[in-house]
Image (cartoon, rainbow, N blue to C red):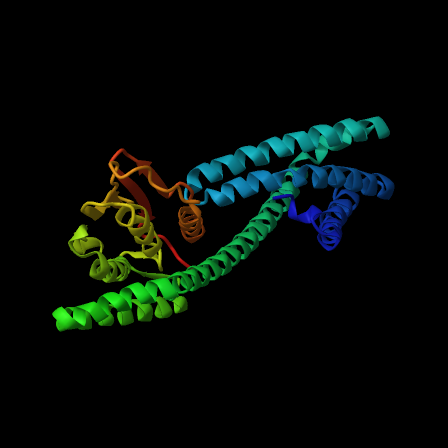
Length: 351
């Protein structure tokens, strides 16, 4: 991000106006306390603080860095003390050099005011850094709001796509046809399948009102989808999932698992002539929860169709927006299986 005082003309104008205050104070003190002539006092003040104003523009990048690493306040304090000392020495050296060329008697006058210059410089530096911190906080809030809006849009999009993909003639026909067939041989199983369909779509609709849900609820939703598909594929589809109780209440983005199990069914079960197992593995690894979904691949049944990976890219982007971190999704293709691993940060502060 560029220096905020240079982004808009109004902020540039306010930045210039702000420096009138230290220029006025410095001029008055030099004139009254140190008995400078009015011309010398005004010239000293304007030249000195124009130089400092220019130097202070570069402090934005250091302030931005320390703001983004605010957890390590000791290092930040040390950084600012060093920066303040260096900026002061640069400011004094340049001011002294320029003013000495203009006023022959300036070396003596300058030495008399060095303590005053330090006393004035410190609050000016602190106010400048504080203003940059304020801009950084405003920018952070703006980015968080944008990320929140994007995530809400992506959740709505994911919900819409889920409904669009699932509530279509093929899905309904296959599922309801399976339920219809079961009514003749196993009415209880048919009723269970219809209830699962109802619960599945109800959860999808409810998820549109929230960005996050618990890992337990998200897994239940994914398993509902698989149970519906199992009504069609029977014993060909095997499911394995064991969620530790300690991480059941972990918050995860809504509808983050369901697209993955869709892919597992589409590229695993659909294209296989033998039994396919889909496994859910959950592991607490300290600051993150690792979720791995593994589906078997029937390598003896030809080459599996290649997808566009749009679903995986969408999930990776949603995770990045949700947690402000990259590389939270990884895929591994093996000869007889395909793995998707998600890392869910724990104790993440959500807005």
